[in-house]
Amino acid sequence: MFTIAVVTACGGDDGVAINTSASNVCDEIAEVACHNLYGCCTENEIQDFLGLSEPRTQVECRADVKTSCERRIATLEFSLDQNRVRFDANIMNNCLAALVAPDGSCAEVVPELPWTEACMESAWVGTVTVDNECRYAHECAGAPDAFCAPNQKCAARPGHGQACGSGCAHEFYCASGICQPRLPTGGVCTSTSQCAEDLFCDVNAPMPVCTARQPGGAACTSSAGCESSQCIPGVCAGPTSGNSCYRDTDCTNRCADDGSFCSTAANCATGTCQISGFSCSSPTACGVGDTCVFPVQCVPGDCVGDPVCTIPQFVVDYCTGALSQLPVL
Image 1 (cartoon, rainbow, N blue to C red):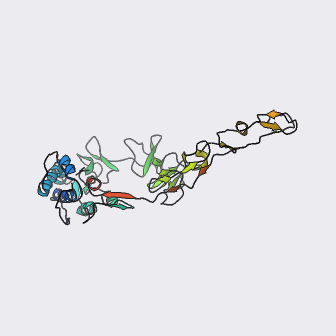
Image 2 (cartoon, rainbow, N blue to C red; image 1 turned 120 degrees about the horizontal axis):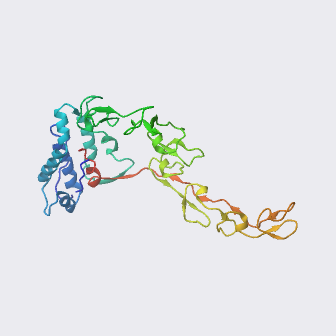
Image 3 (cartoon, rainbow, N blue to C red; image 1 turned 135 degrees about the horizontal axis):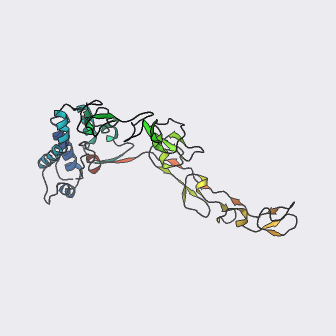
């Protein structure tokens, strides 16, 4: 990624018309970058990025960003010339459009970042098939499930029943050195890496299984189980009052009278033998036929509140946030 952190200077364009091709991609990236820089960032940020002590004009900004971009895509240009990749203008156009700061807005709160899906794939798509010559990983068709091996030929990552080697294809996980299919919902698991995409391993279940992440407002027992990656916890009652919890077992047992820590009722108060009337400290201390009765019980831990998943919310920052996602390898 082409990382930029940069300006609110005055001026700036009213909008950016995006129409990329393999030959003008760095010009278009520079247009988007400098549109956001001069519309949403600070003067100091732009100067820090360019390594200068004096302001730059927006025209000079475009020239600088274009030059940097052209250096970064040198290997991609080589691969294009060798017909080992093709440029997908639709992918690039959609990604850049999602990164452009809207007129009059430099930040907003949204349920999903606009570029998450749009910029997920690279616009440089490998065309080299397995067992054919490559120089770079991006040249292999089907990446990341195919890669450029040390013999400079594209190779497929191993699948079901094959040795893991350098890593399994994305639909598989490595178990005891062998690639196995990722588990569906309900599959018994020990870690999320074993579960199919968008599932997580619910290790808090009586038997850990692969489970779908829950939307905002749904009950949860860990942040891993939420689409937002945040579960609002409850609070323990008793001696650990104030500690966050997701279930009663996260909290310590407590004496029913004063909430102090206990493991058994004997920790809370001295008992009395039901028949003899003697003091006792354990259920069996009174002898055969007699029972030790404790006046205060040791009650289980109590997690107060109903832990729920938060509603996903993201701050869209069209200065540092968007510009850090500019798609240049």
